[in-house]
Image (cartoon, rainbow, N blue to C red):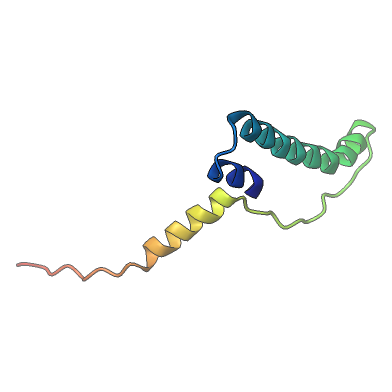
Length: 84
C-alpha cells in the first residue's frame, strides 16, 4: 500500500496508480483464497475440521479510526455546574 501512496505523492501517472492498486487488491484476494481453499475442499467432501485461531490483522483505516477515538476519549472537559 505504501507503493500506491508513494506513486500519488510523487505525481505518478493515473494509469500507474491504478495498476498498482489493482496489483495490491489482487494479491490480497489471492492470499485470502489460498487460506480458504482447504476449508472449502473439506466442507465439499463432508470432512469435519476446526478453524485455526488466527489473530485478525487491522487494516490502516481501522487503526486510524481507533487512534482518533482514543485521542477523542482522552480530551478532558470541565464538569458542568448545576445552576439551581
